[in-house]
Amino acid sequence: MTIVNLGGDVDSVSASELETRIMSLLDGGVKNLLIDCSHLTYINSAGLRVFLLAAKQLSTEGALAFCGLVPNVRLVFETIGFDRILTIYLDRATALSSMNTAATSAD
Image (cartoon, rainbow, N blue to C red):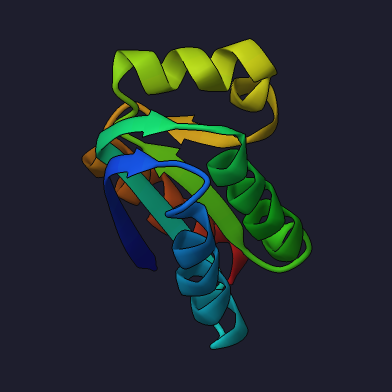
């Protein structure tokens, strides 16, 4: 399980750095990725695109989940329907418990 902590704003400028960081992890063999958004204050479509790329890459072998969405970030996820296609947990503890249980069951 690998955890990426996001903070501040993910906008058109910072999204390319985020994409490089996440794709590097996935290309390096990470199969279970939790993105903790507890300190993320803003995200735009460029950042959301990175999440979709990661979800697509992990869709066949692995798991991608999010936790700690602050209200305004959660609203963005809900408005565009990400809450229906991505796995979102209330907090890190719940996410880790659920993802570790799922990984153990898959073995």
